[in-house]
Image 1 (cartoon, rainbow, N blue to C red):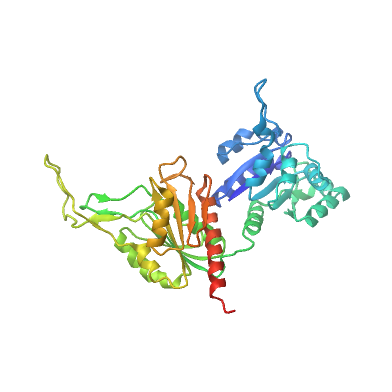
Image 2 (image 1 turned 90 degrees about the horizontal axis):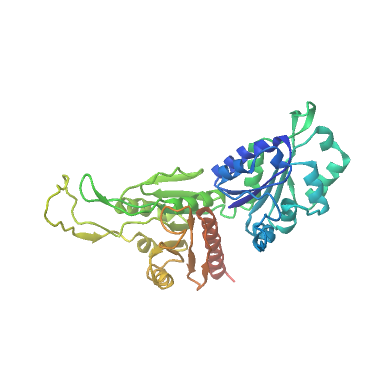
Length: 408
């Protein structure tokens, strides 16, 4: 999910750098928007380096003489449309007043009026400014409009005074973000089985057959599902990724091992998402000793591995089953064939040769092919964002399924 972090001009602006890091650790993509005052306290380069995203500092970016910079003129609309949450921390008395009165005279204030995403502000200022009737009136007006206010802490302030006005603790701000973005917890009560990563099929004690899957897509789905309230079991091939918070991980190596664990866990799940890139073939025989190099041609006899997706779909009952299709040609045609052949409810397909898609990328370009005939083409998104879209589609299919089978 994407968060736009507005940073305004106050001593606490330096704390926003650590906030970026913490939000990223939570799996959010963060883009920073800085006011002119904020740039007096901390450089945009700091946020660019931390976030890996463009830092926006002006409503109209400077263009070479004679060049029409239409893109920058409407960038606030683009940012407003793609953000999932606008967080302003620290928020000065001035920005609170502008938000409350609808003044749009820079990028951040214009963005605030243009976005329909939830808004959280964390004020930080002098105690007298915070307590002033005008500031409190603006705060109450914003609250009435649905803006969440993370009230400042009390303590010693940079101005030398003591009282309310310190920027709230970062964990308190992060908690507000989590609660706002995942308030629905729309997967509460669901048990989701997810497979991820590659499998390894041994040739000998040294060599094996595998593929380039990093597991990032499956892990992103597992993390997103857990945040949305699901009980998640992640069955993972060999990867270097950390287990997402709140997820039960079971590590396997081969297709047979993955099938064994999936078969055990599948009856418990209401949703199964098979994102693993299971090796399609394995050696008929595994050499007990290392195969020595020589000048002769070497032939390997391969046999198919178990078809985990088809095997589980044949016994899915009321469960929703999602498969993945990594293709290099005729993506839609192959995905539709797989959807029918495997008896799946949804196929997530992509062209692994496309820019920004495929193995070991942090982004993906996918199309979701549903059993009810809906094809949902997604633009290039982070894998975290793709994971959210997949879960949204799963819930849509689950609601359709419930409606069809509910008593009249």
